[in-house]
Length: 218
Ligand code: G6P
Ligand code: MG
Image 1 (cartoon, helix red, strand yellow):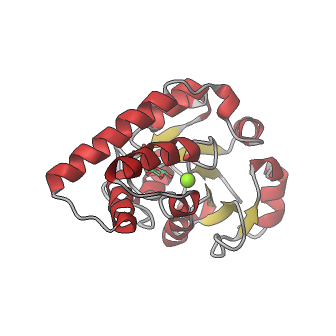
Image 2 (cartoon, helix red, strand yellow; image 1 turned 120 degrees about the horizontal axis):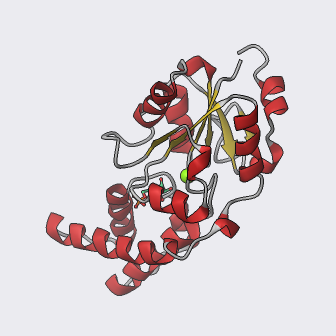
Image 3 (tube, helix red, strand yellow; image 1 turned 180 degrees about the vertical axis):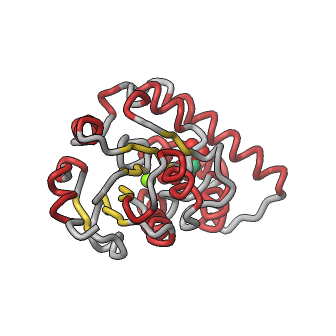
């Protein structure tokens, strides 16, 4: 039986990928190279520092740690400007009703995000009250695919990993769920999320009764 749902934030509950993309693309432009939407796929679920390393690798550039810290901060300042204007209209399809349904069914709800901006995003979109526990990039030391973020989430809501299901749009997040001993639902395309137990286009295709069907033996 599924007793807890653990959600990634960016790309699962809210559409922030476009803001990450715009902010990274601006930095790339400033450094003199083109950063495409396809390149951006590689940054999904990846921490800020690791994202910058990938970006610089794409541009074929090397910088000192000091410069890199400055670039990461600059990108984040830009990103924070965008998310400060977010509201509930940017919650992805099906997310709100599924969170509500979990609550009514007594299923614990936790966030497991790599983002250090998660609290601001949850507050601006009005999602904060739906969570029993919030674990984000300010609480973790190891990035996905390390299972830390989801293990901390399960611990915070007091549910054993085998009764948890993780919702993720990034391959690294699905791997983190598997390593945590949890079930996983990929949100996106089956090609990129092949390791997930099930893949759906969005949370609009998920319900508590569906979880019962999919994980009947859990
Ligand atoms: C999520 C996003 C990544 C982002 C990371 C860190 O995992 O999918 O694209 O780089 O969070 O976010 P932050 O807000 O801390 O820069
Ligand atoms: Mg994500």
